[in-house]
Amino acid sequence: MVEIGEKAPGFKGKDQDGNEVSLNDFAGKKLVLYFYPKDNTPGCTAEACDLRDNYQRLQQAGYEIIGVSKDSEASHRKFIEKHALPFRLISDPSTEILQAYGAWGEKKMYGKTVMGTIRKTVLIDENGIVEDIISKVDTKAHAEQILPTSQGSK
Image (cartoon, rainbow, N blue to C red; front, side, top):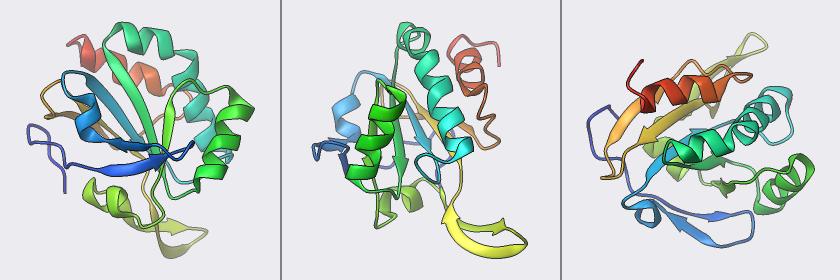
């Protein structure tokens, strides 16, 4: 399980265009690494669009944004095109990245316990240290949950 103040787990994955993305690519930059269950579902679309709508503000605060889900590269590409998302999405069909960040596990769906992606966001500083973990994501106002942290008012 990833903890605030610890080094973020390294990762490698493929984005929507088949390009490899790793934590090392963001050395010296702050990173919003957000985990979400599925492309084109209502909550995930609201979250992605809120991040899109606030992308400039997040970049001004020094953040790069990467989304991670089990969906395929092709699914990510369609999701990005449909909603004009300005950031990359990593495909993690093996759940290796999701597991490393504690974003894969048991959850309740329709009264049943199932294994799946747990929605959460991990903020990583320029040195690769976990700055914050947002476990209760407000999909419609997620950028507001992130920005106060970067401005020290959380």
